[in-house]
Structures are given as structure tokens and as C-alpha cells.
Image 1 (cartoon, helix red, strand yellow):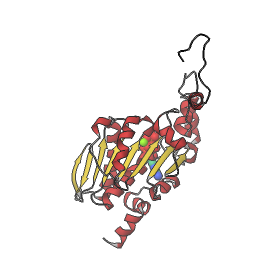
Image 2 (image 1 turned 180 degrees about the vertical axis):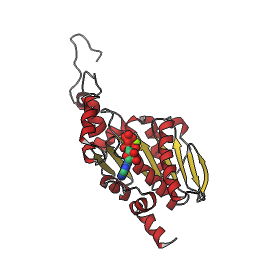
Image 3 (image 1 turned 90 degrees about the vertical axis):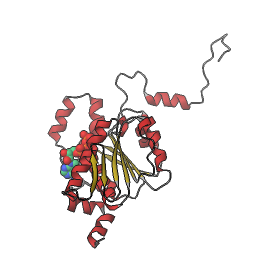
Image 4 (image 1 turned 45 degrees about the vertical axis):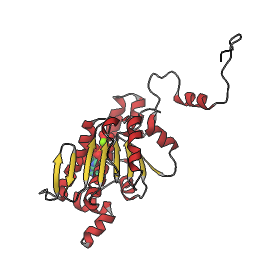
Length: 256
Ligand SMILES: Nc1ncnc2c1ncn2[C@@H]1O[C@H](COP(=O)(O)OP(=O)(O)OP(=O)(O)O)[C@@H](O)[C@H]1O
Ligand SMILES: [Mg+2]
């Protein structure tokens, strides 16, 4: 391996700038350079979550022969979308596809034995992959908890990384739970739309006029909102579940 490639292997940001002409924003640099095994990104719409993840996937596949990268999202169509972003980046490093063994809509296989595989949104279809070095869960707040529970054990036997990227979608599900309760093993990254130079104030003002306040705050400002129309807040439900208050007994009713 040349000195240059050795530097690129160690520094995915240096590589992404030189090979992909992708200049990650500060938050994305943090994600790409972090040694954290578990990363959760609560990042605004259109901030560049999928782009950053695709660059990381291709870096892993190119510089770590034999690696398995899994791309999970709520639907096969969305997983395939991220897969195509990966292929567009791969095209830049290997325009003639000399190192490409196979490319289907849902998988990229390199001659060095690495694979990037897009998975469907149903958990029964994704068992059987072992020891992925990187799992990317795109639109994670909309991925089912069953699917999330099915992918975690795949990381049991190696030092593979798991990256969840999303905007919030209510105060439920694994994305919300990890964001609020995830321990120190999680690198938590929050980026709001006003921090992204490519998103203008005018665009945001117009968006605000065209969606509910709750949607706007979730999509662009990383706030976990109650489902619209919910009569009781989920915080109230949680406090009830944790409380030591015993259930109310009605006079004459001993069955409680
Ligand atoms: N660092 C960057 N520099 C320039 N353009 C960028 C950068 N990151 C992302 N983009 C561009 O911004 C747009 C949105 O990127 P991307 O689809 O990755 O965002 P996202 O956060 O996944 O969006 P969504 O929430 O809609 O899925 C794309 O056109 C992408 O090429
Ligand atoms: Mg995206």
C-alpha cells in the first residue's frame, strides 16, 4: 500500500476530500473521525446525513478488504437509494469499475471481497449476515423496533460499528429511547437546519408556512414532538408507569 493510501485508510475525511470531492461539514467530520462504535445522529433534513454515511460505507469497503457494510432503512426502496449514493461515490474512485466484482441494485461487491448490501425493511429478511464491520440505519426513527432488535446481535462477535441517522418521529421507538437514554457508548450528534450553510433562512421560513409547527420542529430542529392529536403526553404515560402509586380500588371491588 502506498503512503498516500495508508494516510487515506487512516483518515476518511482526507480521502473523501481528495477522492470524492466531498467536503464534510464539521459535524460529519466528527462522525467520520470518531472511534465510537455506536453513533446516533439527530440531524436536520437535507443536512447531508445520507451523503456522509455513503462516504463512510465506501471508505470501509475500499480500505478494509473483506468487509461487510449493511445499509438498513424503513423500506427496500430507501435502502437502495443510499446504495446508489454509495455507487456514485465508488464510481469516482474506480471509474472503470476494475475493482468491482458485481453491482446489482442492492449490492456492491468489490474484487477485494468487500460488500455493501442494501437490506429491506422487514426483519425476517435480514437474518444470516454475520460480523458486519459497519451497519448504517438510515431514517432510523421510522425503522421498526423489531428490525433494530434483529440487527444488533450481528455486531456480537466483532468490533463493527452501528450508525443511526434520522430526524425525530415522535417520542417513541428505539431512536427516541437511545437519544434520550443511550449511555456513554453512544456518540450523539445533533445538528439543526440553521447550522447548515446550504439551507437558507428564506427556505426555512417558507417550510414553516407549509407544514405544522410540530412537523417543522422535528424535520429541521431535532425536537421530538408528541404525535399530533395525542390526548395524553407520552411523558405522562411514562411517569405513570414508573410511579409507585397503587391502582385505585373501588369500594366493593376486591378483584384489583
Ligand atoms: N458537505 C456537503 N457539501 C456540499 N453538499 C452537500 C454536503 N453534504 C450534503 N450535500 C448535498 O446536500 C443534499 C442533501 O444531502 P443528503 O441527501 O445526504 O441529506 P440528508 O440529510 O440525508 O437528507 P434527508 O433528510 O432528506 O434524507 C444533497 O444534494 C447532497 O449532495
Ligand atoms: Mg437521507
